[in-house]
Amino acid sequence: MPPKRSLFRRIVKYALRLVLVLLLLFALQITVLAFPQMLVRNKVESGTIRLYHDGDPNADFEQLASAVDQRLQGSGVYDSARTDRVYLIHSADLYDFFVRLSLIRTDPQGFCLPFLGNSFVSVSRVKALGEGSGGLPKFSIWEGDLAHTLAHEVAHQYVVDRIGRGLWRRLPQWKQEGMPEYIANIAAIRQDSLASLRNRLDLLNNGQAWSATQGWSNRSWDRIHYEAGLLVEFLIDVQGYTLEDIVAESVTEGDTHAAMLAWVAGHPAT
Image (tube, rainbow, N blue to C red; front, side):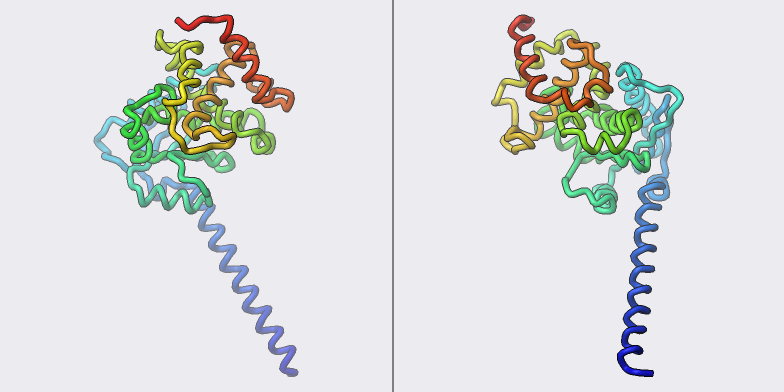
């Protein structure tokens, strides 16, 4: 056999082996992300929420699952026929493993994988945010509320299921984050007499309340998530929009912000 042909066959053989190994690794990656309960086995259920955790089996995680479900019930998009899987991870190493396996470039306190129907939340990261801010401002990622964060990640799944993954991926970030923030928070907000939209808009404009870490439009990351939720709340509760209305390209952040400021001018703080 000519040397060149023999060399070519060896290259093809090793290339096929490499492809097979990569396919096996990819299959393993998807399997672990699709069935995290292989590693996170404790489970409680309440309403539509199936909560898996690696914490104390004797702790009352059912109460937390119930709090998440109640937040979703008050959102206006609740679907009692669905089941949402959330994974509450206490182990920092295990959570980091899921983050790396999901190929996420950021360092989130929680994330959702809509194509697999699973959401993950880090207990330590949520608590660290709350401890670092004193739990303020309320109804923000800095509150350190596990029910809020879990509901926010499940709400991502709600939005994707409602409008489709392709459209969701094309949305600007203020809509991607604002709609889940609204869904996760609005029920709790309506139970707080001091948390009117007008009062929370004053906090939004208080520059001293926010960190200096910059986000997608030269604003702090914590502030932009808070603002995104307020923009969506204004569109739904004041302007009468639906989620389907909000995803339209004609609904822009600039126009919504201008309309909200005009509304603020006619509604003094209480």
